[in-house]
Structures are given as structure tokens and as C-alpha cells.
Length: 520
Image (cartoon, rainbow, N blue to C red; front, side):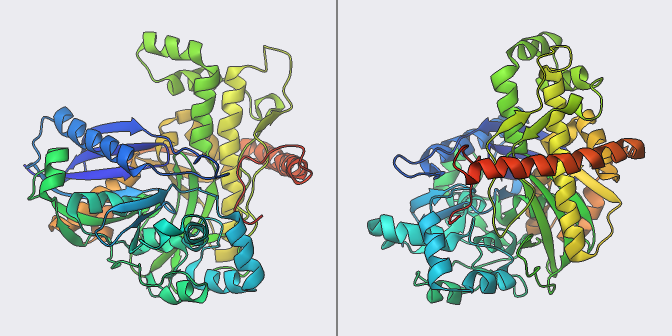
């Protein structure tokens, strides 16, 4: 029997997942990784390609071992990754420099572009759906200004998922869904716009071929075969951005469909036609979908999953031990303890990610407001539930902004990613949004999307759309409690007012922003 492999490079971890050709998950290996600030470079988020490649190889080998498979059993593989993270290569295809997704070192460059090329960000946004905040142009300009000896050697650019495929096959390429997040791209044409680089004085000959998802780019080469135990007969297939491939793994492949991916970041996505221009206020991001002819309006909630991991590791040592003794996941135990906490979590307001303000994007200082010294009501359970509620509230605000732009009515949301494993979290999302929430059987949708991509390349499936509709199986459905929604609507308004005050503290240099887009 043949199998397919998906390699999922997220913000917080790298995973190798093996599926059979029916879309059933066979095994998974995962390693957490971190992206550290570069010494002396404020707001940087470097990507250590040497160290991280070892983790990729370890995950591939462990997934094979766990499934009791050999490399030759993997017919094809593909990769998906956090968007915005870029890797730059020399003329030999060797890595020179790389950053992860929310690297924000290029603040001076963003300011320079806005001040010296008035209106150019708005012009580029109308083509690409991206602002300069996380775009590749300011980062490459930073490299030119601060590491000229590296910049002069740059011959190619790719995204992090593309880098994995390049390491495996020796072929550097990208796809619209991932490459589009550089901002040097056309939503309508689904290809690079090198003239954008020309206009701002950056190398314009570094853009690799752009293939649609599911295109075979090569086979695993000899070196990679030795490092990973994969076969040189295994096909390497173009993958895509984690959110867009995750959409395919959720069956979100048609115009008007809606999903929330609850991972390290939370993304709220609505499918729209490719010819629709982004909103003029630049409030919402728009990306190419993995399905030709479609784009996605997208809201982003920063660090929701990472904040929950921080809370677990910083405050829940006792729950970790208790969960280990019970043989359950610590998040499951925390949900059990939070189940009886009332709507609103006794008034506790987490201040972490703001709602989406893509044109001027920054966050308040991380904090909890309205805590009580009554340990019966203010404790780990109520703070945990407050964090879950807050992720759902910010998601609801982002969906409302997308609805204003797209005019699409939303009554059903597909929810996936690690957060969707939580029954309390899933029900809370339904209650906050007032929408039916559907959970797929395979909650790791990004990996399933990459599996579908591999299967299309291998000829197992005719197309992404057909395979998506065939393979996605629904596990649970949560209906909203509309009385709870009325309560959450009031909490949402209070939270927005509180967040404005917290942003003012950042503006007055009293507190420090959790994250601030370059150039602000």
C-alpha cells in the first residue's frame, strides 16, 4: 500500500504526518521549535535553517518509524508552512538568511518606503492584498542596508514550506498561496510582480518559478534520502500556505465558505473570487487561495495558541502532573475544571491580540484586567476560560470586519487546528459568534491539505477541490446558545473599549506592545 506525507512547518512546531490515500492519518511526529531575536536586532525573529532542518529530518524519520513504514512506502510528499517567513539563497541554492513569520526588524525601512514612495503601499496592496507590515520588500531592504555582504549574494527567495521542499528535492520554487504573502505578487494573475521590487530599488531577478499547488517539482534527492530515510522515488509536490492548504483540508474550497484555524495564531478566512479588489481602507488582508480563481479575505488573531501554551507552562505545573497521572492531555483537564465557570469568566478580560487592523497593526501590552483577589472565582480555571473566550471574541470581531467588506452572510463556521480539539473552546466559539460550528474528523487540517496536494501530484486525486470534498469527514457539530451570544455581545463591546485604553498606554510609552508592525 502507498502512503502520502505532509510536512507542516508552523510557528511553534514542525510536524511530519503520514496519511493513507483515503485521507486517514496513520502517524505523526512533532518537534517544538523557537525563533529567537537576533543579537542587537530589535523585534527580529530569525529562522535557524541549519538547526531546524535537523528537526525536520527527525520528524520525518520518527513518523516513518511510528507507522512501521519504509521510505519507499511514501509515494509523494508536500509541505505547508507559516506564511510571511522567507528564506534567501545564493546562486548555488545554499541558504544565506531567513526569518520567521512575524519578524518585525524592518521598521526603518517601512517608514522609508512610506515617506519616500508616497501612496506605494496602497498601490501595491490593491494588487497583492498585503501591506508592508509583514511583507518581504522591507525585510530585503533591511538586509541590503544592514548586511550588504549577504544581500549581494542573494539569487533566490522562497517561503519556509518551499525551503523544506527545496532541501528535499534541490528545486527552489513557490506557489501563489505562500508566495503571495510576500506582497510582491498579483492576486488576479497569481504570480510574482517583479516590477514592485524594481520600483523600490531591490533586486528584481530573485523570484523563482511559481507553480500551482499539486505540481510535481522533483523527487527526493540522494542527500535528502540519506538524511531522512525517504526514498529517491518519492515525489516532491508543491505545497502552499498553512491557512490556505488548511482550508482545502477543511473542505473550504468554494466561494463564500468560512473557516477558523485555531493554531499558534488564529486565522478567520472567507473565500472570495480572485478578481475582487481588496478594501481601500487596508483593514483586512487578502491572500491567494490554493484553489485557482479564489482568494481569501483573512483576519488574524495573534499568538492565541502560543498564549495558551505560555499560560500552561507558566501557571499550570500542578495540572500537568495531575493530567499525567490521569493519562489525559493537560488542556483537557483544564477544560474540565473551567466547564462550570460562567459566561464572562467573572469579568476577567485578557489583553493580548487586538482585532485585525492591517493598515496600522500593533497590540497592547499582554495583561489580564479585572482580576479579583477572591481565589474562589479568580483562579487558573477562570483565567483559562477567559483566554478561550477572548480568542473567540477577537475572531468574531474579525469576521464582522470581513462581512462588511465581502457582504457575505455567515451562519456556519468550520473550526480546525489544535484549539478545535477542545469541546469547551468549540462550544464557546459557537456561542460567541452565534454560528453553527463544525469540526472535521481530522482536526489537523493543514497537514491533510498538504496530503491532498501530494496526492494530486501523485495522480491519486484529480484535483484539490474534488479530493477536499471527498476526504473531509465531519466529527462534531456545535449549535450556538443564543442567550449566551447576547451576553458575549456585551462583553465584546466592553473588551474593545478596554483594549483602546490599553493601546493608549502603549502610545504613551507606559507599557510595551506585545507586537508592533514595522514602521509604526
